[in-house]
Amino acid sequence: MAAPKRFFAERIGGEMLLPAEQSRHAKNVLRLTEGEEVTLFDGSGREYTAVVAEIGREGVRVRVVRESASDREPRVDAALLVGALKGDKTELVVQKATELGVNRIGVFSSRYCAAYMSDNKLERLARVAREAAKQCLRATVPEVVYYATLEEALRAEAGCEEKLFACEFLPAGGGELPAAGGSVCAVVGSEGGFSEEEYSLALSLGYRGVSLGRRILRAETAAIALLSVVMYRAGELS
Ligand code: SAH
Image (cartoon, rainbow, N blue to C red; front, side, top):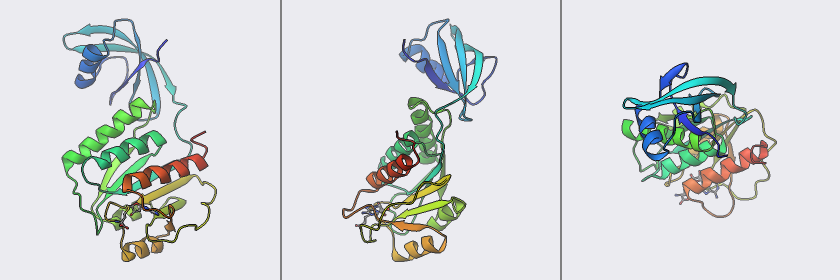
């Protein structure tokens, strides 16, 4: 049997209507039927089993029957800081970082950053994170925050045990990353890369410069590659 369909709602409990957009999708695309079991999640890490009680005019009404903790949440607390990227590249990074198990995503502006951020774009990123969480069966949704400066972003994650700053002008072959700690932050620049001053700032805030090899990767490739290594090392990809 196919896995129960998943829906995100902010407030879950008792008998409730699925939020309007999810109701429409459930009705018109997924064609839910009364009596069918679904899974609800609210981003808190808990999951709820519910049964479709009624498919009506006002939407899809479900009855919550069980609550449980998700067993798919990452054991490492990982954050990604990424420069704002052009086009829909930031969306791609948010989607992939969510699938890989990141808990927080900070998008920052920096010296050579050419893209701008707006409330609309940020809302769109939050939505991409929700959709990706739903698709990969996570029960938490990473929060997406915008920082107007690199310094703000770096300071916001200063509490992480391990702080990695991917810097394209560092020599390759710097050695292996140390064993994973409980919390890690990965920083990747935008298309324009980082300046020497930005690298020095990161070092002064306790970040460690890392190379991703002899080739220059696109920012989105760099983010996915670095997170993959971090998550593999933490036992999250096996
Ligand atoms: N415009 C820059 C490249 C920026 S690449 C140039 O021409 O040199 C975008 C970001 O991806 C970088 O800021 C860095 O965070 C990461 N990145 C790409 N290739 C990398 C590499 N070989 N080592 C470390 N970081 C890399």
